[in-house]
Image 1 (cartoon, helix red, strand yellow):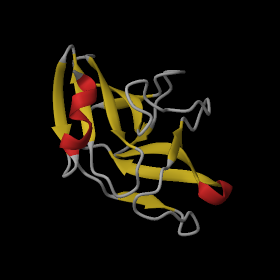
Image 2 (cartoon, helix red, strand yellow):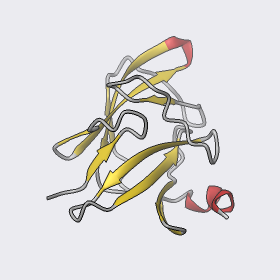
Image 3 (cartoon, one colour):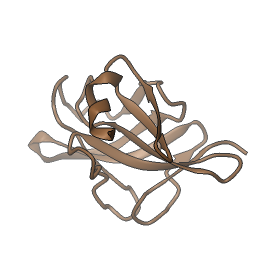
Length: 127
């Protein structure tokens, strides 16, 4: 069994195959879906070409099923989803909502795994 990703609010599955599917809202009230790679630290995305945002811009992430905001309680610049591994262990996954920032965190009972070129930016918030 591979890792699965869940909404922290409704616990619906967010992944299909190798992609995580999230709803996004960007400035100018544009809304759509983004497809992320399941592998932590892989920052390739797929989106509709008409969903436009620039590096440094805040992107709102929402569950595509229950439509709840996925903003993290740790920092408003981070979004949160849940990862469940093949042994049914759960981890909080937090990632930057700022376009162009590469910062992802896997939280496991006080242990933090950080990914991405900007991973040091939010580490102080986990202390």
